[in-house]
Image (cartoon, rainbow, N blue to C red; front, side, top):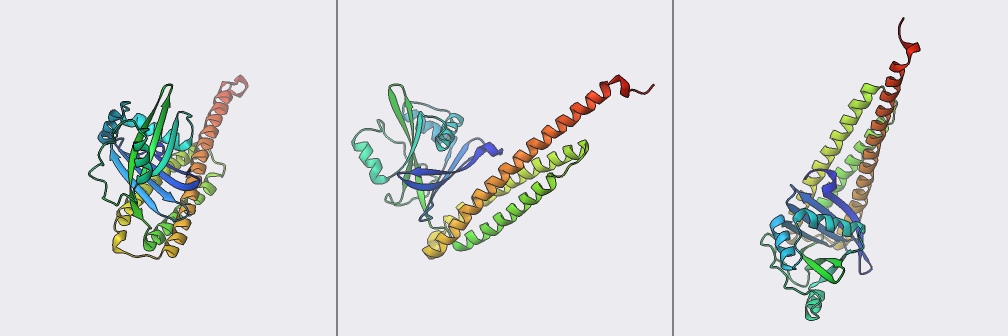
Length: 276
């Protein structure tokens, strides 16, 4: 699943604290989630395949297919459904829920491809689905990644700054008036650019995740990391805005092309414009 609908970046508030949440669905069978504390810059990450997710939902007694579950999760992050809520719990929070038997069923074992971490640092993203007479809880364990490497952040910031400049350049050039053939070509170029940027960002995120897993070998200062992380979050949000503007420009160009085609058809149908 490589289209833009498979990737979501949003700000979500858990227990009064703001987090940057990134959700990505790869190849229609892998869910990736990353949660970043906007104050401390700490990261938590998880990656699950469709089999794990479907087994998880089966054990709750309310089975969901992988694509349905990811749609529910996206709806929860965007707050578009009153029946879906999200929470971010610590290990102690989860044990307290279990002791009160709120969760109802035993949680599935952790996926083998999740890196081990201490229970005190791990977080659990809980998707709660409320139906008429029941509440179903789907827990997703997320492993602690720590603070990002300043060198990685600096490299990412440079790449995002270049991407913003390229997007702004595309928008400034696409704002000029052009003929029908130019409109078609320009729409194709812009759509291709969107796909290229999406692919490039996917590779960038994978590289950041890989390097973050090696943080235990490096000891960046928290202050330096926080400054760079905040700059990175700001740039990522700006890239999202630029990408939305690019999509909007593409829609406008298509509408303009349609309008020009309608005018041309009307012109051809007028008898007074026909040659004698």
